[in-house]
Image (cartoon, rainbow, N blue to C red; front, side):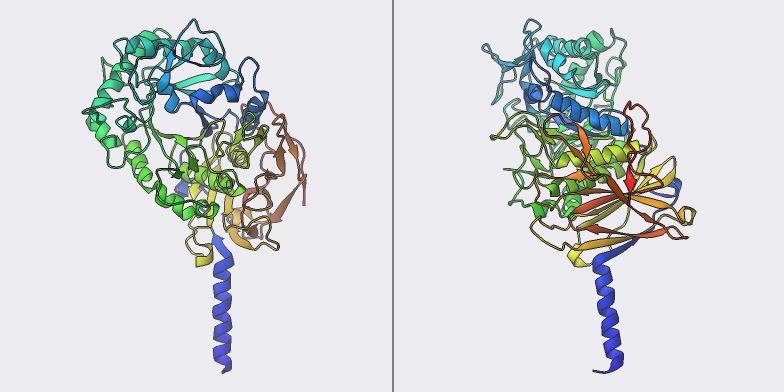
Length: 547
């Protein structure tokens, strides 16, 4: 073989190898020169709790201190507890009885309402709001109200529940009302019949919002813009798309008031019985698939933001309705979750709630004994911890931008993501995700190298590497983030890995950071992530050693 051909072949193979295993990233040093989101609220990465399952998470007669501690951890990291959406299908089954004192719900023996599951089939009382009030102080809570009920006394009933929320939520913060859950599905579940449409929904929503404002919010000195429509499951091919609801008059004033405060929609990456085909953990970890699945919602986000209102994703999960064992509860789902938080932040979505039920394999923790297993923390929780520390890192100034990761070989296509994070307008960190599946049983797992450039202004600086990791993508336990582990008994944090790795940039601000397959790293300039004082947090930081 001629030497020139041999050299050319070697160079080609070397170039291919480099394309497979490395990527160069040069984010803008200043947020003003990057396509960043607005500063993230400290409660951005939140949770949804199915109303019928509330007492599993908060406790009944006795508080569930495990759940409370897990919420408090995240509050300590970001500065505010995660936003809770107390809503779901069962909000539209509930009717309020002020005389029912138990911290529980019960079946309504005198149910008369319509619906495949009747719109008045469950009774709650003051204990419902006493339970949610156990969460950490100032936890922002969106409360779902029953819109499905349409008896002649519908206004009195929704007003009674809203008044109980205002009166009963004194420790947490009543943030907003969601009136009705997923009305786009109400013909299917027999909550409505006939000519049900976005137009009819708009009329019914405004009538209920008007009653709640005039009889509850206004007397309490609260704002009229306190409601989050339309809380839809999927508006594809329906009359519930945001622009259609605007045309229907949803943003018009009613009796001199505008009631919509922000656009609220729901989604799931995969929903059993709805999404076609099976799903595997490897499918979930193909992050290109997330972009494909969410593409329609991206358009809805843009349309919503163009109306001048924020957009929130109040119900989301990897797998619905209750997850899938060895997919949504595996470590690979934690990588998916961290990517999804950063991705949606970059779209200027203001808040994301990952939906939880007590029996779901997609819940960040299991609050009670289920399937013969005592309460425990799932790997997904560690992604919430990572996002909370990333947000707290900027103390109200954290902004996210997506970085281009297209230039990778086909073996890593859809498996590499990177985001830049800014604090006080300056580059502060990069989120580096390698979601190529590598199971715990595999030895000598490969790595993908991110050649990062923080800019010449950050030459000769220390970069601290906080790993989101486990033995493998299929690990159901043993996850850590930033060396932290969380107890399955009391939810408290301890350090499983006391030391934090670091690298140093060269004089031009560049460094190479290898990230193992099925692992993520947050690379933070100048200090260890989570070691700075966080505004709004009473937590103290512990000195950490570096390698």
